[in-house]
Length: 324
Image (tube, rainbow, N blue to C red):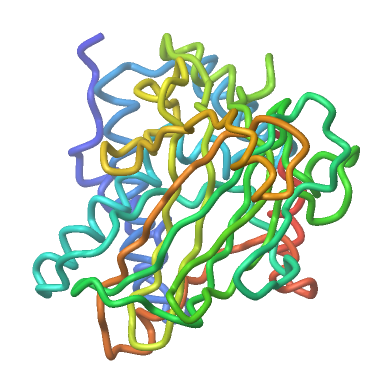
């Protein structure tokens, strides 16, 4: 179809009214962003000759995504989370905040308030009969290689079936979630289980979007981290376990080469006894380097809705309703 109306004065004036430019109230930044967003979408309807049937099908899908609380799951699948990281990397480079372990996406499944321990924590509750014991350890250092004592290392990951506690009601509270404060040498250690990757729910709205793009919704086995220490830039990152079929094909685009870590199988009886374990285990070593900063706002994680972070906040309650 050759009919195009976007550039007509009538439509341009209409867009200004829809965005509230002719009204005194409201927020100016919101008006500017909404005007740009609506302009791009109106032009898209023109350029692709979007039919009413296609438009209302998209509205139904958006309603389904909201009803299933899956916008937080679709967001990394459409690359938004990784794009925000790319922009932040560029902002850091421009400000000459260089060095440190690379950041990568947070994902939608953090839960605030995990138990805190000094130096060592056992993360699993021992109930996952299919879980292979994992010994997760590392050292937090600054960019000059000096250890950072007292750094907070928040860790969370899935169980052997790809489920996360809190979102998976069959797991105990805060299973596979801990905050470990590093010891005098900047070291942290956790006993846990090797996590499994997971896929978005079959047939769910997120799955529908990805399938329409010819893509899968699988994530590799991975472990999430928040790391913070006074005088240092807060780091949000995660490691992917080497050898997973989806390590280099993560639907959430979270893989970075520096963050792919092997799990070494340990069968030596002396080592097993030294760790006070019952049998063979896999050791995962992940050392972390934090960049320095004096800016207080860079020493804490950015604000976003997170489960149980603010129980009075509607957005945080919705974040706790994600279906994965």
